[in-house]
Image (cartoon, rainbow, N blue to C red; front, side, top):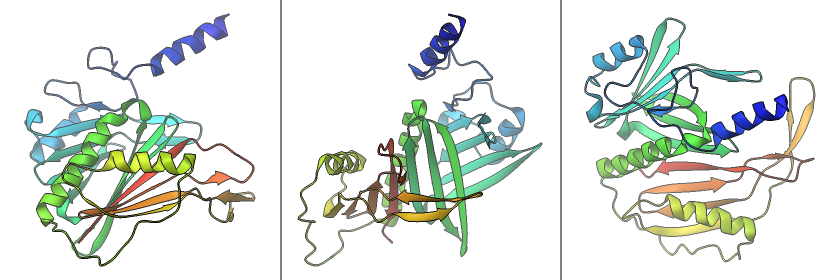
Length: 261
């Protein structure tokens, strides 16, 4: 009974997203930072130096350190203000600063597999590639979905993307199955206001098995089906995660957003 009670308490913590009132300081879920909210002083100092002193004028997310199994994540801050995205990472006693001008962002990936989610920002700044990944609990994915959609909208506004002439591109004639409908729904929900679809390509079938060498032995993975949507602003690719050939179930999806230059 004691074991059941402990499990019940754990499950109850997953049922609802955290709020500012009920999140303890040692909670590992990411949260939106508002003025007056608790924050490590080293992060607060760097945010002030970067121009985020007034948190009401910036969109700031704090992701505390977390660990599970053999994985460990460092504390991170994601701050969006104007046309700059700052990703701060606590490395021991120092804070690593990564600034991404929105116009330099080449690719955004958003992944979700069960309770594990992540966002990866890829950019080319002064000819040098730069990348940051923020991992978080899927319970708080709405915080990061808002961030991603804001970045995409700002990127489109900066580049003043016009309707390009892609010629006579036709949508894929394949009829989607259950998986295809799921991917099509995800892609449709990803469209921003004013974004126009130019072409759609759907690959509802799994790819050929691929063998990858692991630390002790090789494993065979099966790539999942995918859908590619070309719009007047970007290329959206949604696909299921790779699965082991011995597994049948898939548990999530991965979104890739690549702006048009």
